[in-house]
Each structure stands twice: as structure tokens, then as C-alpha cells.
Image (cartoon, rainbow, N blue to C red; front, top):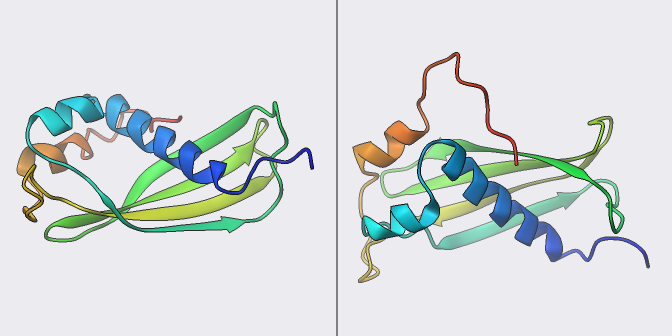
Length: 124
């Protein structure tokens, strides 16, 4: 059909989330090395306009909500010149250790996302 397969949007969201964490100063593998895993509990995507194969996309990722042992990442996917919103979505994540037990959001992890106001917002 010449359009991006619907499930691929979640792969793009995942790459944007990983890049967002990396832009804040730590790779996701570094996060896991500190015994913090972020399994997805829920995922949502609102398809607004089709992305086409070979389109260059702009994806914005951020955090909209912090729980005691969870968080919600939000995403916006735009066309290359940012004139058209193609999709928006969110993923809710539990914070667990390697044993699968819930853990409270560590201070070091939350601090990654509270950089100084003059730090540019990362883009994936």
C-alpha cells in the first residue's frame, strides 16, 4: 500500500524513547546495568496521517507522568518539515528489578530528565 505498517510506529516510538534517554546522558543498557528495567505495560497510538516508505520523520519523545514505580512516555511523529502530525502515542512502563519486582523510581533516574532549562529538548 506504500504506507508505513501500523505496528512499525511502535518500533519508531521505542527508538525515540531510547534516544531520548541517551540524549539525557545514559544509554538504556546503562539503565539496565543499574538493575532497572522498564517493561511496557500499555501502548497506544493514534494514527492521524500516513507515513510513507522512505519518508524522513521527526519524532518528539517526552515523559508525561511519573508514578511511584511507573512512568508514561509520550510521542509525536511529524513529517520532515513538521507541517503535519502523523501520529501521537504513549507507552506506560513499570519500573522493575531483574527479579521482576516493582521498584520506586530511583532519584538518579528521575534526575536524568530534569536537566537545566537551557538544555535543548532531545529529538529522535
